[in-house]
Image 1: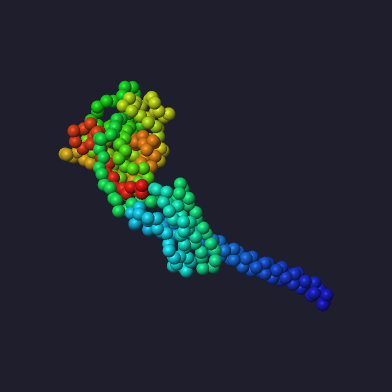
Image 2: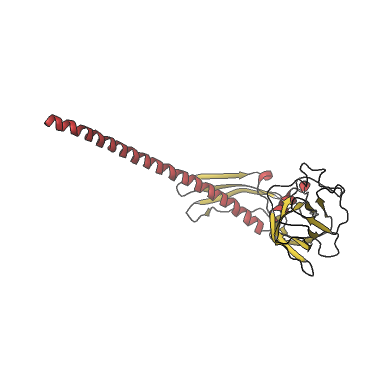
Length: 302
């Protein structure tokens, strides 16, 4: 009987031993994992502190209005007790060279080094510029399916779903490259429309140059124009007209910043309709209500 009871208890004992071993292993692994998580957190914290230091150096120099390059005379203490120091701060205008080092309270260190050609662009926040662009140095037209001759001198830009697209290019030569675009507002005036329900006007960046001879089926990789698939902006509820004609506005900050940063690729943008039938917006050739682009920007240090 004793032997049998021992045989019965043996599996139970083995099971308990296995559970104990697993529990020990899990506790040990958990402690190791927790330690690894803490270490990774500290590394990430140092990286974030260094990025904050770079932004702080940028902010100080942009506030200074492109004067002498400013670093930190003493390490800056972060909220969590870490420190940030900046050295070797100097201009390679419009960019800024710097070495930023961040140290966490637990001792993790992250260093970010920018040489002049690859440093962040610094803008003069004391030199805000506001301008409104219209027909000067600009061009526009529209493409209509099955119309094989270019449209010249039209006072409107026609937009119809999959059958007509408008093209607009503003002359941005007066905006210095690498400017910080705070606001870019496009203003279009709707003169007439055949739609019976409200539609949407999409603004797409053009990917190929064009001229007064542009037509729907020639000069493009894709008929109707080569443009980015993703719209840069949209105008919704396009329908009603009034007297005087109804203006629509939309912000295209990122699009204009991209075009001013790469002047050679300023091919303008395309107006594409969704739910629109013969929507006619005033062109640069109209007697009033021409397309306008309002810009507010800060030039880069030079």
